[in-house]
Amino acid sequence: MPYGYVWLLIMLGLAAGVAMMMMFLPLLLGPRNPVPTKYEPYESGMKPFMLPRRRFPVHYYLVAILFVVFDIEILFLYPWAVILRDLRWFGLVEMGVFLGIVLVGFVYAWRKGALEWIR
Amino acid sequence: MDWVDLVVIPIIKGALILFILLTATAYLTLFERKLIARFQVRLGPNRAGPFGLLQPLADAVKLFFKEEVVPGHVNKPVYLLAPMMAMVPAIALFAVVPLGPDLSLFGRRIPLHMGGDVNVALLYVLAIASVGTYGVMLAGWASNNNYSLLGAMRTSAQMISYELPMAIIVASLLLVTGTMSVVEIVEQPRPLWAWLWLWLGFPLYFITMLAESNRAPFDFPETENELIAGYQTEYGGFKFAVFYISEYLHMLTSSAVAVTLFFGGWRGPFVDQFPLLGPVYLALKTVAILFLYVWVRASIPRLRYDQLMSFGWKYLLPWSLLYLAVTAVLVVALS
Amino acid sequence: MEWVFFGLFGVLALVGSVGVVVSRNAVHSALFLLVNFAATALLFLVLGAQFLALAQVLVYAGAIVVLFIFVVMLVGNETVDDFVARERPWLRWAAVGFFLVFIAVAGYSLVMSGWEAAKGLADYGAVERVGAVLYREYLLPFELASVILLAAMIGAIILAARTRPPLGRPEE
Image (cartoon, rainbow over all chains, first blue to last red; front, side, top):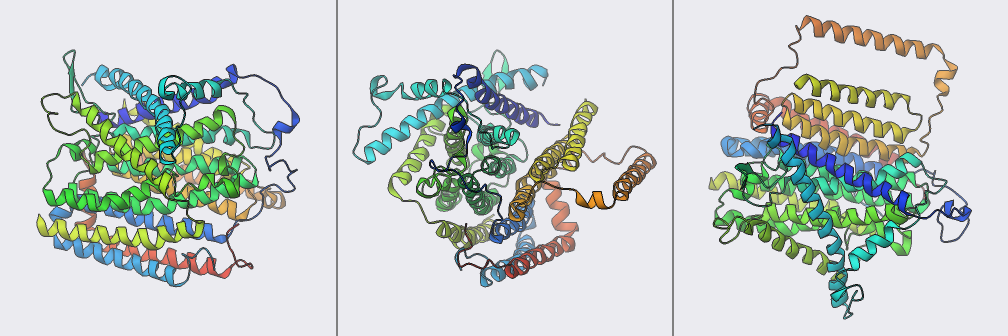
């Protein structure tokens, strides 16, 4: 394991430590004055009549799956981008074909109205 | 490389960087409040200390002595986890930013970064950005509040949508530089066309940065006129502050990353003679980007949500793909 | 030294996957899945597969778990009542049986491979190497991957377009 990764992990660990400290230090410092109203859901002073356990529009799911597809596509760009100088025009053509096929899906999504938020 | 270089020095270095980052974040809040005030022809905070310079300290002390309330209807473990999940990525992003040229101290050679020269540093930036969604999402879900959940769903959909153009522009940058090591990206010499071309892409990148750190005009978590406070509604005391600090930390670190990727990071005149100028240049450039952030917030009103989504998918994504394609052709043709 | 890290991250991955199965709450399951993916990424890193490690975080932790959580919200019922297992008690035993068979097969192949299965070349995981192999030798599978992505996209759109919400504004 090259040393750079150890450093990155150390930084992550330090960040987690600071975040935890910030979360739990005020527990010791702050006052305690429990009043029932404080423990109710905030609804601008109204009594909440429903908790958010309803279904969400399918649109969010669509955005998420389009995101996953594009994320994978973009991941393929990275090793390609590093060695494009060696692949030259051949590399351009092969990535062009790849992107072209994925873009067919993008155009389809667009035409089908999957990118519209108000129908 | 012995274990002192591997573990001890990085821990000291990391702790120092953390201290500087958090202090800078505190003053970033003051910087923003002062600037916004000036934009709106007000004075801004000026009571605590000269020019309000002690204001961040006063805010922090006040928040530390607030009562910590965990409402009864929340999912407690996830509710407490969410602010931390928001803060850790915002800090961890800074690890790859080189603060200056390598330093020689006590006979040791100390690089001024926390692993920015790894072979996949650019991917690390994106990976950290993609994990940043969880803080918002989990906070909204765990709060068990209608406003929180709506705000969280909107915000996470926004963040994943704008991640795509960001990743594509970073890939274009990678095409130009040919290396993923951030340290090399800063140090490598670049022809003039490459600089100009990168700066042409920077506005696109900056827009995605605004969206990723949930800043105006993309500040959908805090659409206070429709969602109270979005995913933060059920958070009070210092738990709220952790979200607040995370947002500003994210602004700070992403500006530093942008400066490092697009504007030569710590490089500047005379930096070879005086290595300590490096961090100064980095800080100055970062402040310039932060000024842009505040300027945009003062000037542009919040978008409507459907405008936001269609802007991301129908304009930003195709544009960034076009930018990538032209970059690829340029790189092949000119190298 | 490598063994220490392997053990540490391996145990973490196992804890994550057990948590996924045991949790009664789908969002908690997704979080344990996140732990599992992070541990897997670290395991890749120990092997020197740097690109794969970051890809694991980027795609699995950054995208797929997000998709899971979105789906959980979409369904809107995240606490699992395992009525299926109550109606058919033999399912639990079948699951245990499958698990044992899986362990046996995995262990057998591990022993037969002479414990060499997970040793790569020195710089095999570097991005340049991955790129060279992917874009020179395995060109066709790479292009075919785009067809799979296309299929996923079109399938999702068709599925989602069917369940159009009855009211005009899908938001909220």
